[in-house]
Length: 246
Image (cartoon, rainbow, N blue to C red):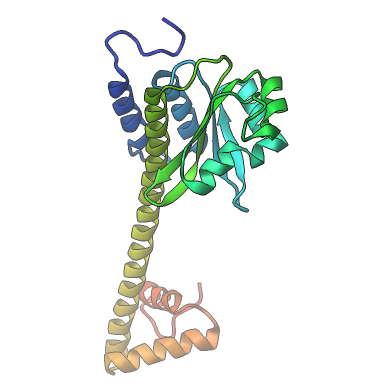
């Protein structure tokens, strides 16, 4: 059995399920892109055996950068200047996978890849876009050092892993966004609650109505250049008007 091949009794289908579960499992631990990428590389060894791999994602300017690589050769090739105009960028911009059977072929559509591919020891390449609906999150690029082609099955599982990685990224970002939103809503609720409590206290303390009490609170906040909820919190802390200084 070659290194990285699925173990007996562990078909690729099960390996893909395992990858999906591992990559999308939620956790209270903050999302770690390096750990996520490491998991992708780990599962790629079972899903597309005999391959090296780089995971590339766009930087702030939209250019692809390597966030992880399974070998020094893959990292070297992915970092080469010619790589920026190669199959991985084509896959990222088009949303379609790009397969190159022989990177050194004279008739190759990617002549700029010949020299760095030879230096890295790679013969074939398969770039699978990381797709989440219509959004492309990055690219998984698979490399082979011999002439064994990427089979249709290899390509199917390579793309499945790439899409799983994209789904996982979206899932984690959605969970993070939801937590931020919940925290913001809870903060807004508590802010509103303390203001309402201060209005009620001030209305009773000054023998006036709620709307007038709110106006008094707001005018005090503006004149002292402090936030309204800070004034309300001090009113409820000191139970006096105007609120005492700390």
